[in-house]
Length: 222
Image (tube, rainbow, N blue to C red; front, side, top):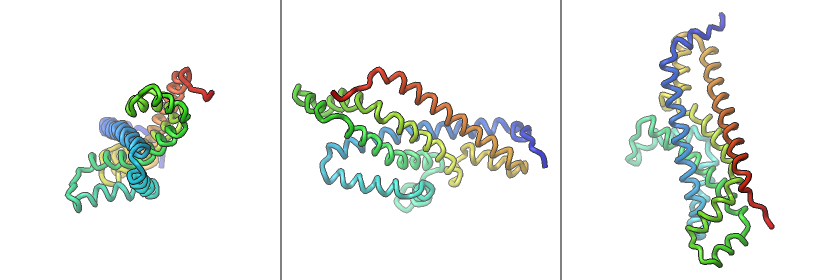
């Protein structure tokens, strides 16, 4: 048995298509997760104790169960509540919901790290709640939440591989099929590992670049 990467490269149209689906799900799912997570963090901060307790329970459930189980429930359990989804939208929803629970905790911690005096100062000059969020909380917490947010983005990227279980035509499913057809499992998995490694390194580099660019806006407690 020899390692023949040409067997895999010969299937490049299918590989490119699978990689495109993976990247699309990753980017759209991550954006949705970040937006939902941010709204959840704001709701927990300003929505009162009932909203806070309710959302904290949801977050605990989502963080305490494996993503594989969650995606099964979304895809196979959806029809029981009138939600009959195709694999691709089910995968997007699953990534968004799973990531939102973690992003909400990241943003909530960022909010809590902003000095209370800065918020009180904004209230004293007549800023509304929305203005305080936009002009004080968001700018000051950005540097604090950037490193854990980049780490979460990487985690969501890797979790896209799980979507092959519900037949989403992303790269893992594509290369697994090619490996089975060509009897080239090692070659297929090597290409898959290289793909994710490149994405992880690129994401880390972009995260470091953003942190460097934003460092000039770092706030210090005085």
